[in-house]
Length: 224
Image (cartoon, rainbow, N blue to C red; front, side, top):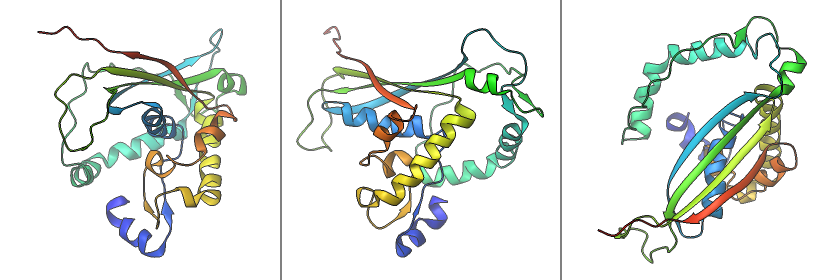
Protein backbone atom coordinates (compact mmCIF):
# COMPACT_ATOMS: atom_id res chain seq x y z
CA UNK A 1 0.00 0.00 0.00
CA UNK A 2 2.73 2.45 0.95
CA UNK A 3 4.87 1.75 -2.09
CA UNK A 4 1.95 1.88 -4.50
CA UNK A 5 -0.34 4.57 -3.13
CA UNK A 6 1.64 6.99 -0.92
CA UNK A 7 2.42 9.50 -3.67
CA UNK A 8 -1.09 9.28 -5.13
CA UNK A 9 -2.64 9.82 -1.68
CA UNK A 10 -0.48 12.89 -1.12
CA UNK A 11 -1.43 14.30 -4.52
CA UNK A 12 -5.12 13.99 -3.61
CA UNK A 13 -4.68 15.02 0.03
CA UNK A 14 -6.17 11.84 1.52
CA UNK A 15 -5.00 9.57 4.33
CA UNK A 16 -4.68 5.78 4.18
CA UNK A 17 -4.06 4.22 7.60
CA UNK A 18 -4.78 0.54 7.14
CA UNK A 19 -3.62 -0.91 10.47
CA UNK A 20 -5.96 0.46 13.13
CA UNK A 21 -6.98 -2.72 14.97
CA UNK A 22 -5.85 -4.03 18.33
CA UNK A 23 -2.93 -5.88 16.75
CA UNK A 24 -1.34 -2.56 15.66
CA UNK A 25 -2.67 0.40 17.65
CA UNK A 26 -1.36 -0.73 21.10
CA UNK A 27 2.15 -1.50 19.83
CA UNK A 28 2.63 1.16 17.15
CA UNK A 29 0.92 3.98 19.00
CA UNK A 30 2.46 2.60 22.20
CA UNK A 31 5.94 3.28 20.81
CA UNK A 32 4.89 6.85 19.97
CA UNK A 33 3.48 7.20 23.53
CA UNK A 34 6.75 5.90 25.00
CA UNK A 35 8.78 8.29 22.86
CA UNK A 36 6.70 11.27 23.99
CA UNK A 37 7.11 10.36 27.66
CA UNK A 38 10.83 9.64 27.40
CA UNK A 39 13.03 12.50 28.62
CA UNK A 40 16.01 12.59 26.28
CA UNK A 41 16.60 10.32 23.27
CA UNK A 42 14.82 6.95 23.02
CA UNK A 43 17.13 4.42 21.36
CA UNK A 44 15.36 1.04 21.40
CA UNK A 45 12.04 -0.56 22.37
CA UNK A 46 11.27 -4.18 23.29
CA UNK A 47 7.60 -5.20 23.19
CA UNK A 48 6.07 -8.12 25.10
CA UNK A 49 2.54 -9.21 24.18
CA UNK A 50 0.32 -11.16 26.58
CA UNK A 51 -3.17 -12.65 26.19
CA UNK A 52 -5.03 -14.28 29.07
CA UNK A 53 -8.43 -15.39 30.26
CA UNK A 54 -9.65 -13.80 33.48
CA UNK A 55 -10.90 -16.01 36.28
CA UNK A 56 -11.72 -19.68 35.80
CA UNK A 57 -11.21 -20.87 32.23
CA UNK A 58 -14.46 -21.50 30.35
CA UNK A 59 -14.91 -24.22 27.70
CA UNK A 60 -15.14 -23.42 23.99
CA UNK A 61 -13.11 -21.54 21.39
CA UNK A 62 -11.58 -18.16 22.07
CA UNK A 63 -11.50 -16.81 18.48
CA UNK A 64 -13.82 -17.32 15.51
CA UNK A 65 -12.59 -19.36 12.54
CA UNK A 66 -12.74 -16.28 10.29
CA UNK A 67 -9.67 -14.90 12.04
CA UNK A 68 -7.83 -18.13 11.33
CA UNK A 69 -8.84 -17.98 7.66
CA UNK A 70 -7.49 -14.43 7.43
CA UNK A 71 -4.18 -15.60 8.87
CA UNK A 72 -4.03 -18.41 6.30
CA UNK A 73 -4.52 -15.97 3.41
CA UNK A 74 -1.85 -13.68 4.84
CA UNK A 75 0.62 -16.57 5.02
CA UNK A 76 -0.28 -17.57 1.45
CA UNK A 77 1.16 -14.23 0.27
CA UNK A 78 4.11 -14.10 2.66
CA UNK A 79 6.65 -14.31 -0.18
CA UNK A 80 5.12 -11.21 -1.79
CA UNK A 81 5.27 -9.39 1.54
CA UNK A 82 8.97 -10.24 1.93
CA UNK A 83 9.72 -8.58 -1.41
CA UNK A 84 7.75 -5.46 -0.50
CA UNK A 85 9.34 -5.21 2.94
CA UNK A 86 12.81 -5.38 1.43
CA UNK A 87 11.92 -2.34 -0.65
CA UNK A 88 10.52 -0.45 2.34
CA UNK A 89 13.09 -1.55 4.92
CA UNK A 90 16.55 -2.15 3.51
CA UNK A 91 18.07 -3.35 6.81
CA UNK A 92 16.76 -6.86 7.68
CA UNK A 93 15.58 -7.68 11.20
CA UNK A 94 17.36 -10.46 13.17
CA UNK A 95 15.84 -13.95 13.23
CA UNK A 96 13.42 -14.54 16.10
CA UNK A 97 14.77 -16.81 18.86
CA UNK A 98 13.77 -19.07 20.49
CA UNK A 99 11.35 -20.71 18.05
CA UNK A 100 7.84 -20.95 19.45
CA UNK A 101 6.03 -24.29 19.55
CA UNK A 102 2.70 -24.61 17.72
CA UNK A 103 -0.37 -24.77 19.96
CA UNK A 104 -3.97 -25.38 18.84
CA UNK A 105 -7.45 -25.14 20.26
CA UNK A 106 -8.07 -21.38 20.14
CA UNK A 107 -9.99 -21.41 16.83
CA UNK A 108 -13.33 -22.96 15.88
CA UNK A 109 -16.13 -22.52 13.33
CA UNK A 110 -18.34 -21.87 16.36
CA UNK A 111 -18.59 -18.30 17.57
CA UNK A 112 -17.00 -17.79 21.02
CA UNK A 113 -19.51 -17.27 23.80
CA UNK A 114 -20.04 -13.75 25.19
CA UNK A 115 -18.72 -14.99 28.54
CA UNK A 116 -15.55 -16.24 26.85
CA UNK A 117 -15.07 -13.05 24.85
CA UNK A 118 -15.44 -10.74 27.84
CA UNK A 119 -13.09 -12.84 29.97
CA UNK A 120 -10.14 -12.33 27.63
CA UNK A 121 -7.61 -9.53 28.13
CA UNK A 122 -4.50 -8.40 26.32
CA UNK A 123 -1.53 -6.31 27.31
CA UNK A 124 1.45 -4.93 25.43
CA UNK A 125 4.43 -4.07 27.65
CA UNK A 126 6.89 -1.68 26.00
CA UNK A 127 10.35 -1.36 27.53
CA UNK A 128 12.51 1.42 26.11
CA UNK A 129 16.11 2.45 26.70
CA UNK A 130 17.99 5.57 25.68
CA UNK A 131 19.90 8.59 26.90
CA UNK A 132 18.76 11.23 29.37
CA UNK A 133 20.53 13.99 27.47
CA UNK A 134 19.84 14.70 23.80
CA UNK A 135 22.70 15.73 21.54
CA UNK A 136 22.60 19.09 19.80
CA UNK A 137 23.14 17.36 16.47
CA UNK A 138 20.95 14.26 16.14
CA UNK A 139 23.42 12.80 13.63
CA UNK A 140 26.27 12.75 16.17
CA UNK A 141 26.94 9.32 17.76
CA UNK A 142 26.69 8.80 21.52
CA UNK A 143 29.99 7.84 23.20
CA UNK A 144 28.39 6.57 26.44
CA UNK A 145 26.05 3.61 27.06
CA UNK A 146 22.30 4.18 27.39
CA UNK A 147 21.51 5.57 30.84
CA UNK A 148 17.72 5.77 31.03
CA UNK A 149 14.87 3.22 30.89
CA UNK A 150 11.12 3.73 30.62
CA UNK A 151 8.39 1.07 30.64
CA UNK A 152 4.79 1.50 29.49
CA UNK A 153 1.82 -0.86 29.29
CA UNK A 154 -1.20 -0.87 26.98
CA UNK A 155 -4.09 -3.02 28.20
CA UNK A 156 -7.66 -3.84 27.21
CA UNK A 157 -10.51 -6.34 27.47
CA UNK A 158 -11.92 -8.49 24.66
CA UNK A 159 -9.11 -7.84 22.17
CA UNK A 160 -10.54 -9.67 19.16
CA UNK A 161 -13.88 -7.85 19.20
CA UNK A 162 -14.34 -5.11 21.80
CA UNK A 163 -10.93 -3.45 21.90
CA UNK A 164 -10.50 -3.85 18.13
CA UNK A 165 -13.76 -1.96 17.52
CA UNK A 166 -12.75 0.77 19.99
CA UNK A 167 -9.39 1.25 18.27
CA UNK A 168 -10.91 1.26 14.79
CA UNK A 169 -13.81 3.64 15.51
CA UNK A 170 -11.75 6.13 17.51
CA UNK A 171 -9.04 6.11 14.83
CA UNK A 172 -11.66 7.00 12.22
CA UNK A 173 -13.14 9.77 14.40
CA UNK A 174 -9.67 11.19 15.06
CA UNK A 175 -8.87 11.14 11.36
CA UNK A 176 -11.99 13.23 10.70
CA UNK A 177 -11.72 15.64 13.63
CA UNK A 178 -7.96 16.11 14.06
CA UNK A 179 -6.48 15.92 10.59
CA UNK A 180 -4.74 19.25 11.29
CA UNK A 181 -2.57 17.42 13.87
CA UNK A 182 -1.58 14.65 11.46
CA UNK A 183 1.24 14.60 8.87
CA UNK A 184 0.34 17.36 6.42
CA UNK A 185 -0.88 16.64 2.91
CA UNK A 186 -2.13 13.07 3.29
CA UNK A 187 -0.37 9.81 2.45
CA UNK A 188 -0.08 6.17 3.55
CA UNK A 189 1.10 5.95 7.16
CA UNK A 190 1.23 3.54 10.12
CA UNK A 191 -0.96 4.61 13.06
CA UNK A 192 1.91 5.47 15.41
CA UNK A 193 3.23 8.11 13.02
CA UNK A 194 -0.18 9.27 11.80
CA UNK A 195 -1.77 9.79 15.23
CA UNK A 196 1.29 10.65 17.36
CA UNK A 197 0.27 14.31 17.84
CA UNK A 198 -3.48 13.73 18.19
CA UNK A 199 -5.61 12.96 21.25
CA UNK A 200 -6.17 9.32 20.24
CA UNK A 201 -4.30 7.94 23.26
CA UNK A 202 -6.46 10.03 25.61
CA UNK A 203 -9.63 8.88 23.84
CA UNK A 204 -8.58 5.23 24.07
CA UNK A 205 -7.84 5.67 27.79
CA UNK A 206 -11.40 6.91 28.29
CA UNK A 207 -12.86 3.91 26.45
CA UNK A 208 -11.14 0.91 28.00
CA UNK A 209 -7.84 0.64 26.09
CA UNK A 210 -5.44 2.11 28.62
CA UNK A 211 -1.93 3.52 28.18
CA UNK A 212 0.14 3.95 31.34
CA UNK A 213 3.74 4.38 32.45
CA UNK A 214 4.79 1.44 34.65
CA UNK A 215 8.21 2.68 35.74
CA UNK A 216 11.19 4.78 34.76
CA UNK A 217 14.72 4.48 36.07
CA UNK A 218 18.34 5.43 35.53
CA UNK A 219 20.66 2.75 34.19
CA UNK A 220 24.13 2.31 35.64
CA UNK A 221 26.75 0.17 33.93
CA UNK A 222 30.11 -0.72 35.49
CA UNK A 223 33.04 1.20 34.10
CA UNK A 224 35.82 -0.87 32.54
